[in-house]
Image 1 (cartoon, helix red, strand yellow):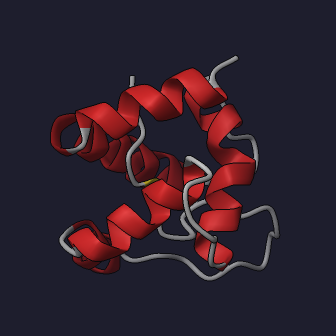
Image 2 (cartoon, helix red, strand yellow; image 1 turned 45 degrees about the vertical axis):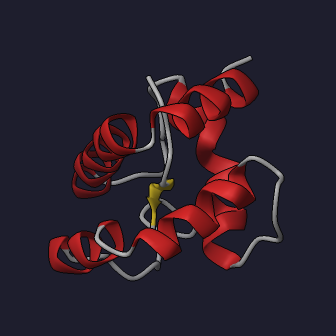
Length: 107
């Protein structure tokens, strides 16, 4: 298990936020975010405490422990699917950062 983007871990792009009135992230928007390497690297550095966080990064840091444990009670089924897709992407494309994130957040 690794989480590079989560980054959008939850994409890593505000995929999973605690408020119930949150806007949905379309699959197209998620795909665009996953294709933006600079955005992903910025979120990963935030998650690892190596750079300042934007609102998405702050959200990811909050939810990373939940997601890494396989539970996001605030997430809808669509968000859960998007999170799984994001985690898979990060594991494949950013294995070193994924290992660091797992180590940092899974404990």
